[in-house]
Length: 171
Image (cartoon, rainbow, N blue to C red; front, top):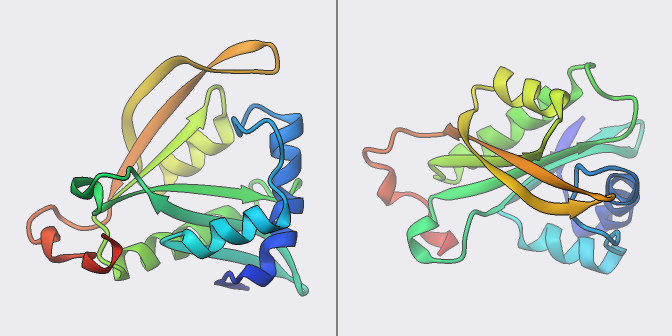
């Protein structure tokens, strides 16, 4: 089941996310956020959805501001995290599709996502969902003893024409 997250989901999201921080280069954070920080992030997101499996959070996807300046208000940055063992089950695609639909409903025009390279699973998911390459930041982050590249992809949620009447509540 996919549903909107609440701050009550913060502990479960923090637990799911922690191994991505400590054990991989997928996240550039170096310390896992605690429950209070995760609750703050959930509350501040454009949209945050969770995948629930038998009453527990098995994944989440969210969108935040792309950048702080007002001209960027029609764009957002998206992310998705699944518990270990959920890759290639369709769960990530279903969760991301639900997020993208919610963003369209909110009037956002463009979604961007960054992924540490290499990351074949994330690249494949984004490609399957219609994201297109936007560029690569070379050697932009240092984690686990090496410089890491980040590839950026983007997806049009709405045609640009007429999009400027969109997310005025997000400014």
